[in-house]
Amino acid sequence: MSVRIVRLGTPRQDGEGTRIGTVRRVPRGVPKERYASENWFDVWFPVLSPTPELMAQAKAAESEKDWAGFARAFKAEMAEPAPRHALDLLAVLSQDSDFSVGCYCEEEVRCHRSVLRLLLTERGARLA
Image (cartoon, rainbow, N blue to C red; front, side):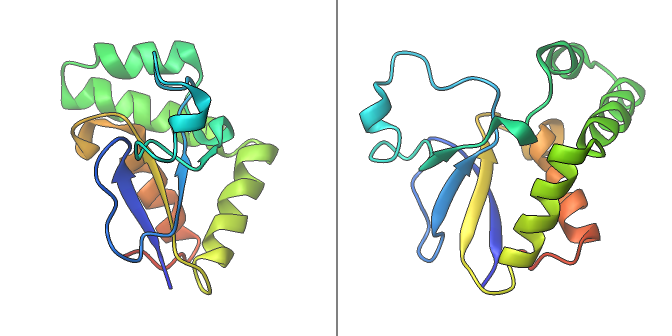
């Protein structure tokens, strides 16, 4: 049992389980009924996504220093009660369930899901 960190919209891996979309906005031009069948996500969970302002900061990051600033700010957002509790829940669920969390970004190293990976690991989540 474990949690996988994935890119939304990519083919699902065996054993991936429920796909959770940790994005602020749903995919453009995709009817709600097709989110799961087109491998976007089964459940939309924006509480684990950056605020629009912070997302703009991430997209504008040109240097490692800029990215580190985004990561610090996103960690601060995830320390708020609702996201903190959600991360705690996912870490516990990863001990007995298979599921995945993801975002649309092509490269995980410059995506908030890299920070989610770290935060889940810090909470003892089992990662695939």
